Image (cartoon, rainbow, N blue to C red; front, side, top):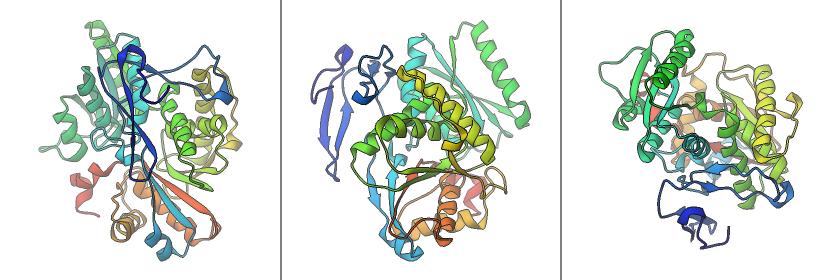
Length: 368
């Protein structure tokens, strides 16, 4: 799409310059318009498939240097890509995925978004916010007991108008989620099921195009390090790496899953996502780099490693991490730097996927 041109349906695209001199894209006009993504020339402009997308994220997200952290660790040059600044409800990586998921929901004439997650789910917070912005009803199935006073992400879920169904046992969540979806369908609510973490082929497109954005920012990074769990972010990055020509390596630090599961799942999801772009690419588990050495404590269990990472980023760079995802991924990256996993002359980019509201959750605030 040319600079300053009218997008399909009369939605206008404007160009503005950020402080880093990187062109940014903002949309005006009707927020309900669905835009179609132009594909990279090397991937096939003549493809019949051009995925629908609602453009509401604040993109491109900036890239910053982390000189004091790098000096303190005696390690490689460190950068950070601020996907905590995607603009929707305190930002985060799920916003990129929701641009494609909500467009798909619109095309299916859905009226209700249904999703699930942990009590302090960042994904559910952003889903609830997107539902409010675009006129959907939202129902969230969350694992945990209903607290006397909601805090952090749960408080925000309520502010965004989501209906919340509490499930005490995580093992029962899938069943309750399906029952909720079926009941909504029978009641004429036209539900659309947003997968856990937004991690479906449609959602993973968000990070395929995030990789395109990174390549266009023209900043050399030998490694991109990030938190991985449901696999959608990593699958999208892996596909984007192949399609848009990123030459570095992608390393996912597991929050809760085994290395074997991540390799299999991410490869399969990246392969399925490629079909959304009109050309099948077969990825194998060997192409997926994942490290599960830092998740033995369990999901959402704060250890000394996460505490140290959160405090180092805050004290040395004025940056806030969350206690579940970026705190664990940063802890893994810091440990790997200390073990000389990265070469000192390399550049490592940490992808900040957001989640800071969880810092204020009752279960974490007193432990950080």
